[in-house]
Amino acid sequence: MKTAIIFILAAATVLRLLLSFAILPGNTTATDNDDVLARALGPGILPAVGAAILDPVHTWDHLEEACFWLENGPSSWTDSWGESSGGSAGYGAIYTPGTRVVAPPLVVAFLGETLVCPGPESAAFRAAIRKLLLLIADAVGAFCIYRLGMRTFDVEKESNEEKIERHTRKEEEDDDLVVPGILRPQRGWVFGLSSKKIPPEESLKNREVNNCAGADHTKQKEDDENGDAPIGIATSALLDSEPIITLDQLPIFAAASYFCNPISMLANATGSTRSLWDALLLLSFCYVTLPPARTTKENIPIKVPSATKAMFCLSVATYADAGYSMFLLPIMLWRGLLRGAQTQPTFQRGQHQDWKTVVVLYIFYLGGLHFLASMLVGGDSSTYRSVMVQTMLPNIAFIQQDSSGSVPGPSMGLHWYMFVQVFDRFRPYFTVFVSGVAMMFAIPLTTRLYRYPSVLVATFQLLWAIFRPTTTVHTLTLGLHLAALNPRTIARMRNPSLISFFALPVPILLFVTFHRMWLVTGNGNPNYIYFQCFAYGMFVCIITMEFVSATVKRDKVRRMVEKGSIRKILAEKKKEEEKVPKDAAKVDYKDGPPTEEKKVEEKNGTCEKVAE
Image 1 (cartoon, rainbow, N blue to C red):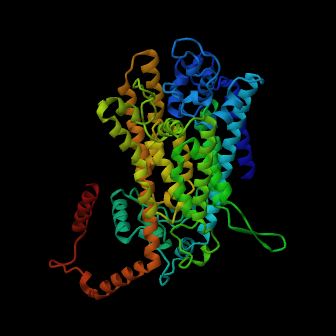
Image 2 (cartoon, rainbow, N blue to C red):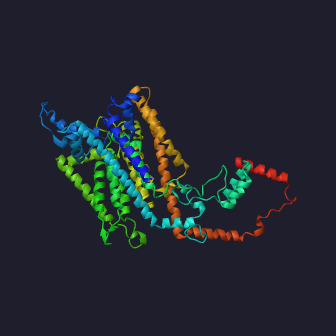
Image 3 (cartoon, one colour):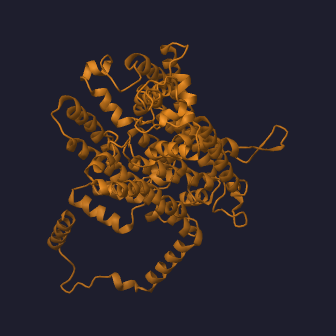
């Protein structure tokens, strides 16, 4: 297993380097005259791919624009008399109205001036450093996903949920912690969990279907005696199947999939810097889930400081994109919010209880970053306030790029299409409402699912994959991999989510096709793209709603077992069954026992009902 994983990761690394240095050496989607994809699929294919997977304000191209305005500030071109004033206006000139620069000042200073702006190093050297930096970012992100998955499962192993699972697999009738077969996840066997059992009435229905289909009654009888599920076309669950992937294997598979997925490869090869901010976000999760103490070789407990590192990573990611602030809520849950020390179970008393410290550190670091940025920009408070508006709003709200009314280009979301259809006087309402939809779900979801921070992290990322102003497939990729770290929830998801997952490539590929048809060949129109964006959003919505619904079902069953509600219901049902007379089920044949002909007629009637 380990050898195979290492080989896959090595092959993915080679493929990433080949894609970045050979196939797409330009590291940009602005032009595609000389790349392999353009020669193979025609001009315009690379900008179409970029529209599907790139956020234009988080690319190296955008930092290159900032470098241009840094060296050629608009205020340095001409003065009020139309004469050249010479010199450079500094960082304040970058955010002059009309420049459309969204990258924050510190990002331009640390990434732009060192890796993008012209300098003593050659352009090829800077480009190679950029590509290697994105490769390292994805590798760090994959490692953090692995560590996050392992720590999540370690916490679940010590929880009462794992205890309920162990008792359920034993299936002792008098055990209060056993979950009835009808309440178990239907696909639990995929991850080695207990699966839903077929109730007696469903088993009888399956047997009737088998009889109608001409199934082998001898084989059916043997299966009933062995306790196996009835075999037939209406079988609703698999009972004793080998797991496809175990809980211990899932984190390494999720990490390998994150590093090897083609979306991340294409995004990095075409110049996306989103992987840097995602890596910082995942690093904050990795630090925040560290145990509060560790034991040395001499069995001496040592405190493990992690709040400072976690909040620094999250504050830097939030400074670059304000949308990451949403993830402070699940981090606070990991650090003890809504989990009182007095009523805390014994297995959780060793966890962190410093969520207030975490919040203070987050505010301190984020405020410090903005203070440094204000010193870099210069001017008074109103000057930096306008800079904050220009750098923060485009990441959380769909707004005009400047006073000319231009808006960002097409993406996988619906904002770009709806915005241009709205009358001018309603555009502020549209901006506030749509940008607030994702935030509107934060508090209710946190209140309901506070016992599952890893579920909240995945849910928030999936919500951003729908409501982010510039929706990209790259954002969805991270959300799906975070969701994969919650197998107890995935096992309860229904068929529509599975269908939606496998249907996602269809609108993505059609979006790329129609984007080129509309903007390059001229034989298409925006409506072609709109319907693909609508289908894409619908599929992601179905997956997100199913994910949340399955978590609520999982939590409901857990609460019922903890409170003993299931045991009470089963006891009441058993009492009601005992009250029924034993001879109530006997059939009183007025005309004597049925003949063979009557039995055939009854069987045919049953088959007709089943067919209906």
